[in-house]
Image (cartoon, rainbow, N blue to C red):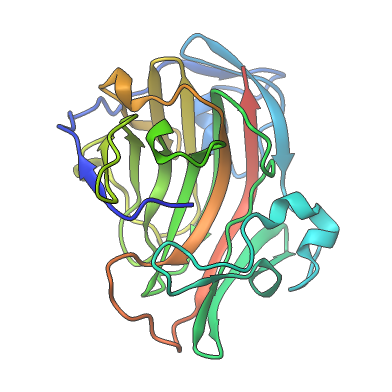
Length: 274
């Protein structure tokens, strides 16, 4: 599920320096661990919270197109057989997802004139309230497609909030934001998050993105550096969410070329709980 529009709440210029973060078991500072090319192992201490991994996956098993769910579990399929947010794309994990060379691969393309997309879930539909979500990924700069890696409410009620990171067109910038609870109106919600000037460009190689969701605060990290945090307590969800790695067609109303194609690759993911 995905919202169809955003209204931005008075975004403040959030500090570009995060709190002291330390990974246990001899893995060094978490700012370093978060930006590491190697999947983090063990607990992570950050901003006064000790995080314990509940899901870790670095995609060491090969799985061809159509085989991903049988190798990694059906929970990873996520959405299937219905339209994406714009209505142009079709969620078709069996035609999009594979694993090779140690990475999850999204093969974004069109079949029979319709874009094929996917939204796998590292922990399936299992609910979790508060958490730390780390992912190392890269994208091709594919016109017409976007990523929306997000935490979406188990209730599927838009007014329960939403946390996005990273979210943006594959030929553009990645944005972070958290929806203000109860602000849904006319297909849009008010969002709190970093200024757009803090938004990095995707399609520039491998990057690590981390979301930390704690009572009263959401923080976002890019390659080990905090790019922003919520400034409004109402912009922090309090109900269970699920982590969804959503790849879809752009929501700008433009037609997606049937010849457009490219990839999102995920090196590893780690989901933590308190």
